Length: 211
Image 1 (cartoon, rainbow, N blue to C red):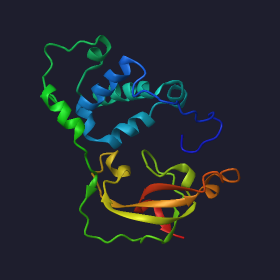
Image 2 (cartoon, one colour):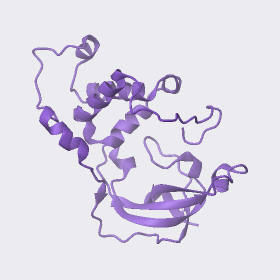
Image 3 (cartoon, one colour):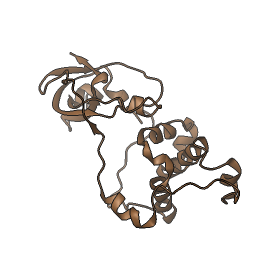
Image 4 (tube, rainbow, N blue to C red):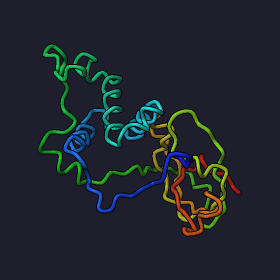
């Protein structure tokens, strides 16, 4: 939740199963097979558009299902009537499925990559001190609230990757350099965080400035 307080403790579940219920497995499959799957950043943004009280009352896969329904409607893949009834309109145009049954196993075992070619050199080098900019962008961003304005050190440069802030909003891939930045835990969360002395996070170049 972006480092916000007052939402209760994080309570990891020992030996947590991949799915707690069969319907969760089905929702996961629907999202993977959906024609909306081509842009993971847009999917994340759609889940972020769920009103706060509804979001907090939902489980993880309930959020996935709510976002999937909205994206199918927005993309014209289904009508509101089809979605409400759970039945396809026999007169509706038919599209080629994104994945056929025989393609699923190979598709799920093949790792994708958001790494892209970019001729411009990275602005920051490993070991350099940087500050996460104090930005409040409208819409989707991967700049976590709890690191904004905080100083860390670049650990690694990963080359140019698809920039989620643009990709989620129809602005294209807009590749930008990506870095792993290490922050001191006490600088992020204050006294009491000493049991974890540091914390690393992947951040895109537009999120950073020299400290």
